[in-house]
Image 1 (cartoon, rainbow, N blue to C red):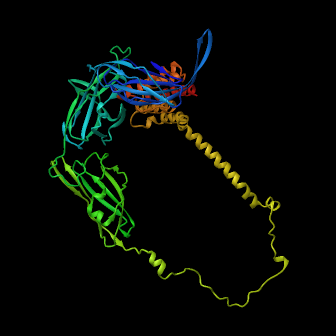
Image 2 (cartoon, rainbow, N blue to C red):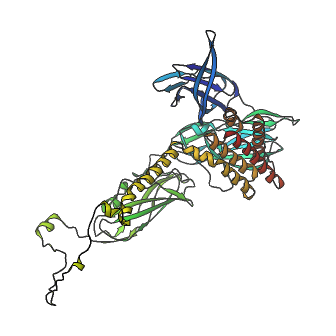
Image 3 (tube, one colour):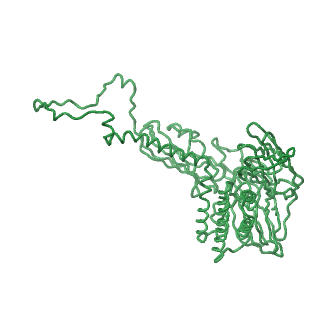
Amino acid sequence: MSCSGEGLTAVAEIESQHAFMGEPLSFRIRVTGSDTPVPDLTGVTDFSVRDAGVSQSSRSSFTIIMNGRQVRKDSGAEIVFSYELVPKKTGVLTVPAIAVVAQGATVRTAPIQVKVDPPSETSDFKMRLSLSKTRCYAGEPVVLRVVWYIGARVGNYQMSLPVLENDAFTFADPHDGQFTMVQITGGTLAAVQGRTELDGRQYDAVEFTKILIPRRAGTFEIPPATIACTALTGRGSGYRKVVVPSSAASLEVLAVPQEGRPAGFAGHVGEYRISASATPVEVNVGDPITLSIVLSGPEYLENIELPPLGGQPALVRDFKIPAEIAAGKTAGGAKVFTQSIRAQREDVQCIPPIELAYFDTKSGKYGIARSAALPLKVKPTRVITPDMVEGGQVVVAGSALEAWGKGIAHNYEGYDLLSDQRAGPAVWIRSPRWICAISLPPFAYFMILTFTVAIRRRNADPLAQKARKAFGQFGRACSTTGKLTGGTSPALLEAMREYLGSKLRISSAAMSFRDVQPCLTARGVDQAVMNELRLFFEQCETDSYAGGSGKSGKDSMLADKALRIVSKIERELR
């Protein structure tokens, strides 16, 4: 479906016009006639939109018949913008006409209709969504868990969690080392595999976890999560598409109370502790002092900021405090902020306690966390004023003259004391020192020019170097898969995604076979190789999330298989 203008053409393609709510669909816009097109997808409201990268193919040509004559047309380079669309509701939805702007010209693609059905769970696949609490205060973390129960072998899967698009929340990941981070539509989730029972049946299970931190008060509906996957049929003859919904949830978020709120309260919710240290502690007036402030207490501190130190009256009275403060660093259950301060007088004897107001959700009351005062020794600094320089005594530094007490020094004469100081080209070309001096500037200019050209070529196409190194990096990944604790299949799958992303110059995050199939086909990769790659993706994803083994002797076999596939792709992409 396309529209065209003066040499500018835009074609919109969608993977399918029949889908389930929550099922990700590949969507592409193919543009010819310009090297700098810009699609505008702000009008897409019935779908969540995720950018999946941009690729460019070489020039193509075709022949048409005009008035009985064959005319060869050059379509120019084709730029493909790839996206992932996730339907937000059921019914007949419309992907509107997409405007593509390039060099002052605008063309629009034709709209596309998609019939969206509601997803449904089966006896083999179920999902459950839950919250650690259904009532909390604004700023109080809530743990969201989604458990996927798997009763049959699965191939490719894609998960959608619509709450990640809700700007009423900020998000964090759990710190437990047992989790593996996985890419999903719109973000990441922490995942852990296991086996459990539901309704009297044993299932393989994957538990996904995300931390929700509400920004404001209100009642928020947490929409169902969905997983779209390919499942092996009962007879083992092939795979069928399955889209499974989770349950929904509701979260009531309360505003922190106004009563008893301290003047310096900046929205910190939870029971906080604060400590501070400074270096150096012996300074002159005006010397910089590095003040380190450590916040701890709440479990999730990634999104926590320190209020400006300008709000600490005792500190402002004795110290000069810049407006800028370094970004905090989270480590070991604490977040550390550093700030440079300067003592303004020599009578300052300590850095006063730093205070932080917080609301404790357990007690329902406000509290003040304070650091200990830090002893400080400040010495005066002598300031030289203009009056002292102009009217005061000026001491001239220098060496005193010393009388020569050994009599009159002798003078010497004679031709043998004369030195040859002739100059000119005839002398220069015989002098090694002059030869070096003359030849050095051109040589240096040549070296700088060569280096500059090399840097400009590399910066003009930074992805080319990454693409050239992709095959070697994949080979090293295959040789180390047996040493990885996460298993062979996940490691090889991630290495394959990185390789294909580098070669095709597209995003490797949560890449599936259908994301790379059009690009590889356009680059002329043989269909037999494509089939091998598809089976590789299905095998790795099945082993990773459906209890497959991928152990012992199969490790090296799978790695060898992956290396053979990539070697064939490498030859055909050159």
